[in-house]
Length: 526
Image 1 (cartoon, rainbow, N blue to C red):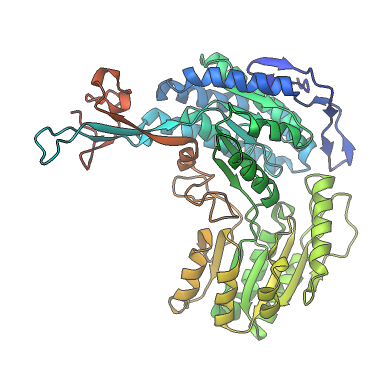
Image 2: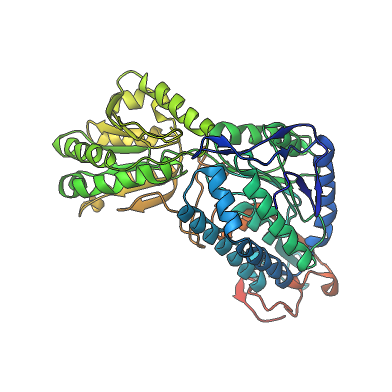
């Protein structure tokens, strides 16, 4: 049952005076439940409890944390249709999308459970002492990754499960040994409460310390600001806009004790259509990209918002095919009136830019809160000169840039803001465009060959991040088990008694993990 209250550990509270409701964009009506925004007192209690819980949780063995993460997955599965129905009622997304995203969320949790159960992720490194080394004896030094402390996770608007309450940020932080406070997204607070209940139930069932997880409601920015500024918070995870992520990043840097913020932010995900691909497969790629641009009404951080090609008949034919194909696709509901309002506003601003033309826009009447797909086009020189054309339009929008030649195409990529992904579409010509590939690689976190950027495989090899502003730290990914590294730091023990070392660093290797000992990877004990 949804209560509308905040979870401070296992305690449900609602002492604040500010309330709000979620919204069903399909019916264009508010949902029934009244949610209570967390007060300053509740925020402080959540952080204080998370700090206390961290002292215990950071020392819990990986096998026990694995039980906790697997039980969260079990509890989410047990919510059944109630979760799916709430998800759809708060997002306007389909039942099929909800089921798929639930599956991804559960898979993420189980992947981290397997990671911490095995244990080698802590990257244990041992350099043994050598008293005979000349001219200075070598001391015993041992290093491993340790958790940062309480982490605040901001739920994303476009993925109510996979990037929200028990999403990748939360799963990774819990796996690392950090306590977590989720600032629930106001668009899907009911979905968030159900998942929070699942996490709390899992924590109690597996004997985790109270306060290892809390879920706080908010309708604006105040709760998030208070959390980021709280001295007990040691790191922040965010998925959303560039403006929102940068504001949190700056706020965290200005604290007396600055803390890391990993923000995965906006991206237009450039697609490079090389000449042979345009000539030989233009119609095929047009159909493929019409589907990618409109997938989920364009509400993906990897939506292909920019297509770059060389001006000429082949690119013109590709655009013609793209325009014909994209208007055949039925539009879909966007997440919230505020989301479609921002889409229409940003689209209108873009269309006022000199030199930008509308290639096609869906003209027919659509239901309330449904986004009409649009393709625009501009010449390369204009795009290069006007950085306003580089901005993301979150929704079913894409721009085709007609470059004069390869030199101009390379210049555009070089001057483009960094992105999550870049795609090369080629047909037996890739070896001729090494410069284009190299330049694109320096601007993105993931490069795709003959595919679409929409769709992020959850696996150890995935990089979902990139140079700023794709993310605030290009050294990390927000997807896959390696995303755990955002919530840890390297820590070193020097000349420490073996019996007092963590199990990962003890001579006898009681965990049986892979370690680096004097430069060699091994599972043997000392």
